[in-house]
Image (cartoon, rainbow, N blue to C red):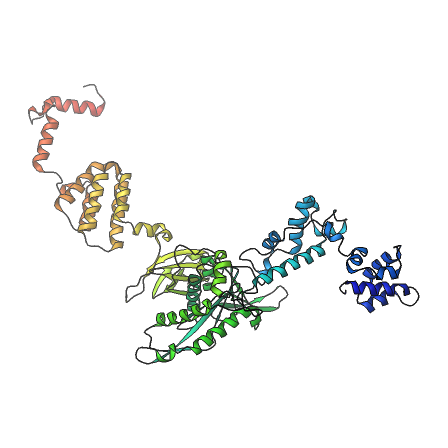
Length: 592
């Protein structure tokens, strides 16, 4: 449809007399580049008017627009708050694909609050079919008015950096990452040329770039580069977009229900672990489609030019990559801080950093309190016994994970083990870094069976178990302390012996006094043989205590004298006839 300017209206007025005789509405519309519906509407206004065609053509531009009602009805519309609508359609940290639609803004922010449409009828289908409320913009009119507002808003940002856009994605939404195609060559302290890979990241909204060098382009190096990018920008974006590099993706063949197989590419476990830790989503760009992350491709070229123009890597020697990264950071800082001029006038514009600090820094997510430090990452398959081999030792995962793949992250002196598909934490182990001739099996105490728990009891565990023996608590506690401190045994033999003592005391709970005397004898004589201790405890309850006199002989005699002092029969050692008659009476049930 052509723009309905006054000249076009006069032509339409002049040609309208020939409709029906010389030409048709469709032919007139094609001639004037106006759709048929509009031609019919304006011809109806001309024919229904009392003015002649000559009088209509002689009207000035403003009178002509009023006559054809081109702008008159717009003055009666209730105007929406376009600033609120723009904020609704551009939420922070949201990509364009996930942003709300203009139809939702029309319904929720204009039609509903201004005209009180019921919630159950608040659909575009209902509003389109029914008559619009009085002074209500249609969806198309609303869209045109909003686009005019955005055009006027864009003119306010003409002086900003050329790569800073407000329509492509919202602030803090997207961080694009990529790697340079070639190597960065730098000289070591001895003059040897080293080669490193350089990774580049860019915030799409503000155009801030960051470069970081690593020895190789492995998955672990990509992870460290992403963490360094978050630290440089001082926050986290909502999304990270990358290409399908083999170091950061995993490819799997999936067979559908129809029998056809297809390859699925998704971020690998390292990338998903970092994203989960920093609460960021990871997006892969299209295969062989660099235009999907054009900002990063442009930034890579910028970094390549910066490296090529500088002489820092040609004539300077560096001790390590940390010094190289300091030089790269200075190069990108100079680029980010460089002020740019608008192409339309001589007004000095903003730099990338200034635009970032004004419009994007506040939209970035907060960094965690503790920075993620990854020493190593690896993938393993659980063996038939439920173990994985890591650094020459075997770590127990669980027999319910046999044959499944797991993902291991090492932090300092511990490793965290996750399921490979869902990254669900299974267990955590302390890493054994000692040089051993033979591999050892390492289990967490929570993974022990009952038998293994019994063989791994500590002195504190045995001290707690002695409370189950009320008459022997003190003696057993001292006996276990004596065994742990004075008897040299390996952990398994010592635990077996202590467990036998607990079991023996439980089975002979009626012989508490005898066991107490035996334990006192062991502690007093400081017996340092576990077999001798077990033999004494057995003899104490089997009647073989004559072999060892647990109590002092003089003390025993004194106890016998005190026990028999009250018996009159002890006046003489000779047994008289009364004694034997009483015994016979008791045997046969007599009274005598």
